Every structure is written in structure tokens, then in C-alpha cells.
Image (cartoon, rainbow, N blue to C red):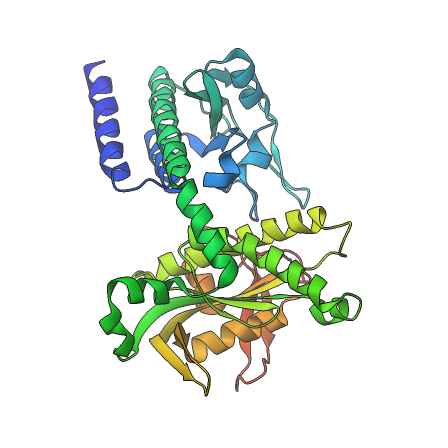
Length: 401
């Protein structure tokens, strides 16, 4: 028992150190989930399911690893018996016999016992910690207390994240008002002007980046049916709803062109760039589905097609000088950017298409479905591309290796 308490203390100390540097709830929840996976070796998957009605404002659902494609834990685990019983009884529970996970393609994943623990802020349940074990496994008393410890830490993290979000609302509202005047001015340019104006004259440098292009499918067709004012309002409403997901994932909105956006992810780590770009793409995809529903009485559905590519690009200030004004932007140029744009052109029906380098860096995190080789405009040789949402029509579903 002494060793057990020592491990609990070590786990809490380790987590406190990891969590001290961030106030972003998603990073905190991912860290807690990763720690719980390590502490409970019999677990197939662990998840913290957000139930707080304000959650979409300050976080996004975690992704479930038990599926062959991107499925968020909220839609998967919220309605499973263990989670429902934990909420109803307001205490931790274990379900010894559980239903298998049913994937969208009809295949199933057998699971063992399932544990769930409510996460409280004050006296309110804001989330549920859910742990699914392998068939034939069982939860020990130690496992159950680890789940309880981490659920308590999750409650504190969520409370801190919400308070931080509340404090920054006034600043966000001001930023949004300013953004209405110049909504897509790159954040990099603003930061440089405010903090390091000497960098405006600095030469471009080679950096690892991931570049995301998105465009609205059917924009030209819809423009023929609607007035310019209506179309401008629609584009502004849609793009404004994409700004928060992009910035939340560390993206920099670089260029706008009518019905399209270019976003750069330029963290110092190449894999982080690719992961953040894909997170932003899924967030944008979900926002688009919601907006289509909300605008159904005014517009027919508009798909957002996305292309993502990763690699080395020249990054820095670009200055466009005209007779009336000079415009500055912080951009990435080169083949990496060109290919990302071509992949977006190639996407159809709201798909997310990624290049080979991006696929390599997200391998094991999300499935990517091989669509084979394709000749793209302006690219000399045929290139392989992957979909994050759709199986290739000509073959059975096979995630990329």
C-alpha cells in the first residue's frame, strides 16, 4: 500500500509539472488522458468527455482511438452505460460487461470492463472520465483511485480554463470588433509591428511549415443566384466562424482570396505543425456542417474543401507596393505552398486532402485513406494524396500505413 501511495504522489507531481505551463484546456485534457493510459496498462482507450454546455467555447472534443477514422469521444462514449450511470449516480462506476464499439463501416471492436468517473466543478458535473479496458482484463482498486485522482485534476483544470476564458472575453470582443474592419490581417504582422518592427525588413528564412488552403465549393454557382451583398455576408459569416478554430490550433491566417483562405502553421516542430493543421481542418469541417444547418433557410449547403501540405518553405515578410497603398503580409512561399493549394483544388464535397509529408507526420494519430497518384496543375510529376474523411471509391477502406 505504501508503494501505491507513492505512485499516486509521483503521478500527481509529474502531472502538475506538465500542466504548469499551459492554460489551454485541450492540452491539459490530452495530457491527463495520456497519463491515465500509462497508469492503467489494461486500458484500450481513455477519454474525458466534456458535458459542460459552455465547453465548445473553450475546448474541442477529444478523438477516440477505437475507430478507424476520426470520431470524437463525445459522440462515442457519452451515451455508453458506464458514462450514463456515473452521471446518474454522481460517483465512479465499473460496468463488467460492455457492448462492443461499432464502427461506421459496420465492423466491431470487442471491449472489456468499462469504468467511468464524474468530473465536478463545485457541485456540477462538467465531464466524465471514461476508461475502456481490453477484453478479459479487470480494473484493480489502484486503477480506480488513479481514475479518481485524475478526474479531480481535470475538474480543477476545467475550472481554471473557464475562468481564464471568462477573463479574456472582453479582449476577444474587442479583437472581433477590430477584426470586422480587417478580419484576416495575419496575426504575425500585427505581432511584428507591435513588438519587433525591425523584423519588417528581415530576409525570409527557410522553416518547416504546414500550409492549409480552404475554399468554398459551389461559390460561383451560388453567386449567380444571390446578390453580391448576400454573398459577402455569407462569406464573412462563414470565415468569421473559422477564425477561432484556426487560432486555437496555432494557425496564422495569411491570405484571403474571395472564397478562400491560406493558413500557415509554423511552430518550431514540423510534426506539431502537421498535427495542428489537421486539428484545425477537422474543427473547420465541423463548423461548416453546423453553419450549413444554421443557414439552411437562406442558402443551400456550401462545402468547404481543404488541402494540407507540409515541408520546408521560405517564410517572412512580403511587401506589395501599389500607387495608393503598401500592403504587408507574413507568408510562406515555394512548392510546399503551391501543392497545398492544388490539393485544396482537388478536394470535392467538403473533403480534407493531405500530401505525403503531412500523412507521415500524423500517422498513428488519424487514419489517412490513400487516393493514389494524381497529376496536379502546375506540378510536373504525379503525386500521392490522401483523404482524412473519405474512402477511395475504387477500393475497400484501407488506412494508410
